[in-house]
Amino acid sequence: MAPSIAGGGWAIAAAAAAARGGLRKFASAQNRLSLLRQEALDDAVKLIVSRCTEVESGARNVDHILTRTLLPEISKEFLAKMANGEGINKVHVSVGSQGGFQYKIV
Image 1 (cartoon, one colour):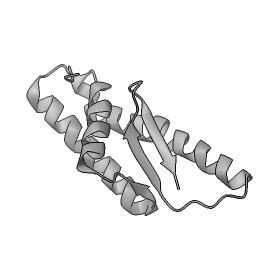
Image 2 (cartoon, helix red, strand yellow):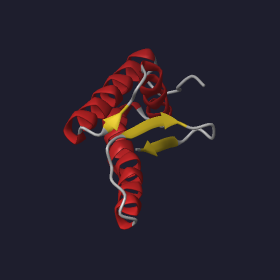
Image 3 (cartoon, rainbow, N blue to C red):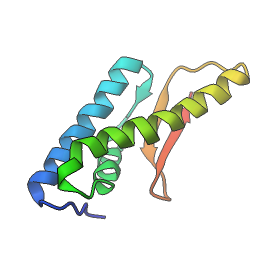
Image 4 (cartoon, rainbow, N blue to C red):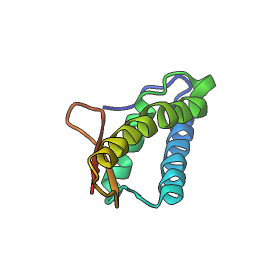
């Protein structure tokens, strides 16, 4: 699925750079998020970019997706594990077959 963003190639590149930077920033801050393969990072970036449809708000859309989708979903998984007394070492993020984020917590 090719991203379709108003503004063309430069807007897609900017959104991809913002998404890649945001994912890496979060991963290094948490020291638990793992995008094990370059392919997993690329897939996550493509998913984020595909959700950015307006050139005027590209970076804001990326931040919104990370802070209002990715982080809350991971937090929910963390809380469920903690409630069951399970430890959390790493979170592997990928894109699932349904086209959404998929998390594996180990």
